[in-house]
Length: 153
Image (cartoon, rainbow, N blue to C red; front, side, top):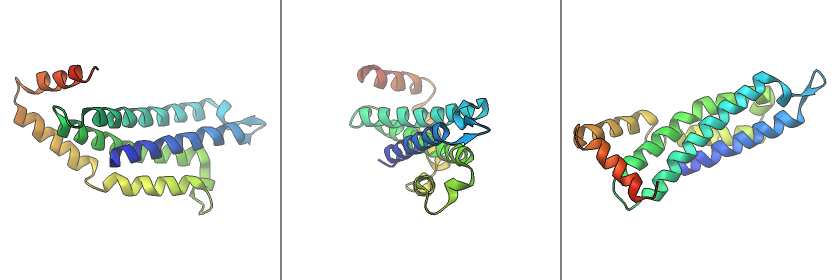
């Protein structure tokens, strides 16, 4: 569930970044018209979408084959997305995003806390590695692929 919360928090900061880039003007143009801001928002969207995809897959697999692997992968991926996503969101907003009154800092503070709760990405990546080694060279990929086929992927 923490991976799902992180994915939702990432969606929130992406929405805030896009909204801010559309409303804030600099040099007579909205920030969102500057290619560098567009590039940053695309990177933020990428981090958000990969965390959401991993969390969604874990939710679909719960109770099925490779449940533990999907949960570990979701938490690892969602946690790994927090640092770059928060950095980008704060870069887009500038100093205003750090002020106590701004909604962005509320979301990023939660994300930074959730990132390490119930294990950081390093912890979950270690678990994934152990699961892969335990499955062995002839079992890991077939077991992973079968769980996706059974889920209609």
